[in-house]
Amino acid sequence: MHILFADDVKDTRDLFALAFKMSNHSIRLASDGVEAVASVETEEFDVIVLDVQMPRMDGWEALQRIRELPNGSSVPIALFSGSLHYDQIEDARKRGADIVFHKPIFPNAMLLMMEDLVQEHRKRQAP
Image (tube, rainbow, N blue to C red; front, side):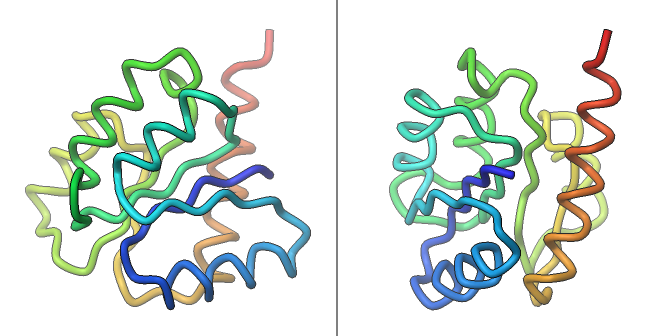
């Protein structure tokens, strides 16, 4: 899989990047929503993970902007947060998120769920 992972905490980005690379996935890192949107404008991803709370552009706005882009209109997108409540999780789905990951989560657990999400997405997209 080619993964876009956006989080403003460098240690979090580094930890998840290492785990994903060790599982033979490619990863593009972004430190905020602005970088995430710019990445989607130029690259295609199999799955995107957006931290909710980031500087310059948070995950909510990045989600909306990515969904408006040709490369982001149908790609599976996960929001990543330690502070979303149940009603916000439902709102995330209404806004176009496919799944919400709650912090803390082990990278391998996230990866397994993302692999399932991408497989389901591919099945739905198949003719």
